[in-house]
Length: 187
Image 1 (spheres, helix red, strand yellow):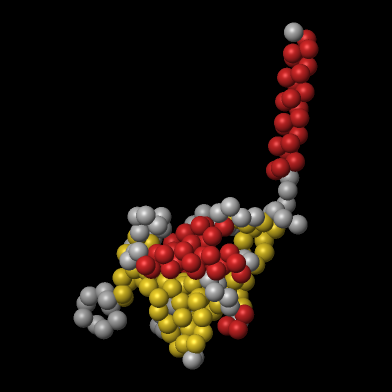
Image 2 (cartoon, rainbow, N blue to C red; image 1 turned 90 degrees about the horizontal axis):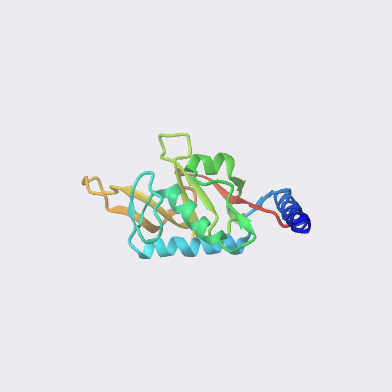
């Protein structure tokens, strides 16, 4: 009986030490690697192709498909970091949270596919919208986002959901560009 107690105590000690070692690793905050950002953009294309509906505050999984702009970014990056050495620094975030807390602001030439575009309406100084960057072509910035808009003033939202769109590079609605910050325990 004494041997059994010693054996159990030894096992408990070994397992508890292993758990302590795992929890003392330091999380580092780094720029999201380009391949993860590109994977996030691939997921945004899946949302677009699934005719996702816009829903303010929405962050539904791909199968339910109602999402808002920040929910799209949260989900796409969440899917992109699965089974990788990286993790998100948040469970949920608004477009202004991404801008203020979870991105490193960069200039347009530094953007990679899947990086972030921060936007706002001309009459508002703050960031109120976020999109995933695709490319720059002939002075136009191409992106995927989730929104609901009546663009022609007829009272009907002709944009409703996840779509691929573009604005002129000098459009006043574009406020900034960023690379998402992610966590890693890799050295």
